[in-house]
Every structure is written in structure tokens, then in C-alpha cells.
Length: 231
View: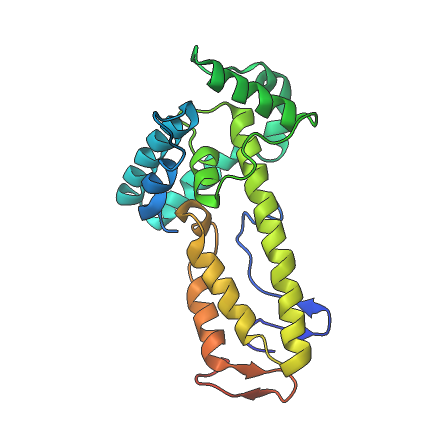
């Protein structure tokens, strides 16, 4: 046992955010650049929307404290995750963008069909940063179902990463009695998440991972092979 981390064959426990992607699943400096990569001769309507969302996200990043960002992210998620979303399904399904752009209207319709189980996710294939721009933009730029579809696409990416990460963790544990590389992977993954998602993890999440990495703890021998104290 090391500071709340318990390891045994087939059993790895580590921190998840309070609003975990399993319950409800890089730095923002790259947001605008990422948003603009969907270009040809002219920006598509989605690329234009993402660019505008990136500008709003940058403004939030500059103005909000971590606690304020956490509260805003949780408020944004409240309308697309859990009982509130399902209770408002009829209203959500009737929602259409305030636009005459055929591409934008078609994408909103596709999102509605997807969240009702009858079509591929229109945002499948977008990066986590772009998906976060849609998910957490409650300005009215996207319909509720579009934001839900983006959240589900992000959820799928997170689930796939976690499944692979836990498999690698067990292989590391079986081979060496350690989880040091696993903690490194988790920290790298955390650092790559959009700020709105990072804000939903405990404040000391990265610090704890760095501590466990430095310990280089061997669970077979119950020995610290690195530096620091488990207390």
C-alpha cells in the first residue's frame, strides 16, 4: 500500500476525476491551431464554429481560476449528462441551430439521430481538444444533442485509453512488481487533456502521480527503489 494506491493481481486502483468519464466522461494554447486545421480553400462551417469556440475557451482560460473552471465545466456537463439530459430528450430533439447553413443543419440532425441510436456520430474522429471545444461550449453555438454527441465521442476515446492503460499496468506489475511506468503514462495522459477536463480531477492529481513515480515502489518486495516517502 502506498498513499492510497493498492496493487494486486487484476486489481489496480488510482484516482479518477469527480466527474469521471467512466461515470459521465493539450493545453489550450493549441486550441485555435487545432480548430483551424479543418480547412480547404475556405473554412468549413464546423471549422468556423470550432475557431469561435477556441476563442471563447482561450478567454475563459485567461480569466477563470481553477475552481471557477471546475464549476463552469460541471455546469456545462449538467445539461448533456445524466437525468437532466434524458428528462429533456423531447426538447433536445426539437432543437435546431439558429442558422440557414445546410451543412450545420445537417450536422445537428445527424447528432440528434446519433444520440437516439440510429446513426454514426458526426464528430467521430475529432481530437480530444476539438471535442472539448464542442462539449463545453454552452453559448448556443451547438445544439444540446451536438454537445452530447461530442461528449460521447470523447468518452469513447477515454474508455479506450483507460482499457489499454490498465492492461499495460497489469503487465508491468506482473513483470516487475511495479506501476511506475503506468503512473508515467497516466500523468502524460492527464497533461494532454483539455483544461476543462483537467479541472475535474483532484487539485493534487499531478502532484500525487509525480510522487508515486519518484518512489518507484516495488509491490512485490514492499520496497521504495526511488526517492521520497510513501507517507
